[in-house]
Image (cartoon, rainbow, N blue to C red):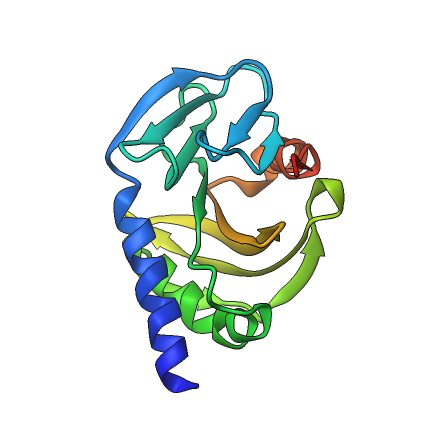
Length: 177
């Protein structure tokens, strides 16, 4: 089981490293993800922009206007890990995700289960710490659409300000298959 945990953690770290290489587009109608063979659609708040990574099947990032410190990212995840394995590794995954954002002194909460829109169940962990000396809150979620696991990261120095935006995004999720 320890080897599986390392593989899960390694995969999350690799996905997080892909996020910087992105092209930007303006939000409009519902986003379909992934771009090739979409499995889910969701909406972004007015004014938010989104970017696709070089490989559109791997990374997607959305940000509010005039705020480069707040974002939501979605990535595909290795399908061979079960929800139980991911849940067991969630605190370790949270630490790895926090490190990938250069978060200092991350405080990782206990795994929690909740739902996105469209009846999509997720397991996640809240992480708080400092990025560039500023307090930040990061929510890392794992969820499945059909048989395809995905991850979502929500990062913000002001979770209160963007709470409604995050709720709009997560509640608008709809499976396409």
